[in-house]
Image (cartoon, rainbow, N blue to C red; front, side, top):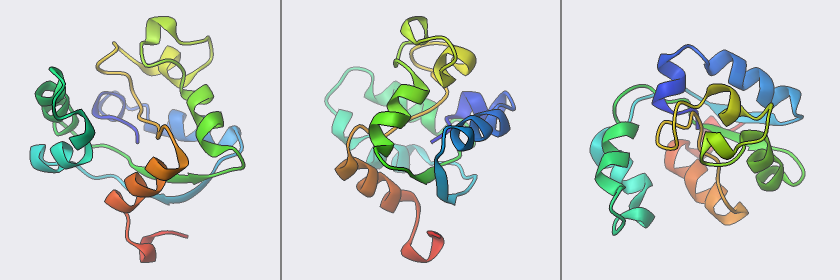
Length: 131
């Protein structure tokens, strides 16, 4: 999911190009905006953490571009492509190194497991929206 900071800064196209150039196939994609309530549902796993409310506010602050991607070893390869959560620690050439503003406004979200990828994909897309 391309986050509000990267969408607002006009970086969606460049990020999508990097994703496709890395061999990912986009199965589903759309531009949308979360309400604070929907952001809270998406990030419910972090509900007890001190940053939860700020995260929900940030994620509902502007448009996002959620995607479902396919590739062999997709989760591991995507996490490598996006880089470390803190862009200061991200490797050169990664999405976060190139486009993130801070650890909070870090340009993109990537699932951390195949199981979570399925859950997160279903959060944004029905089966009829996946090609």
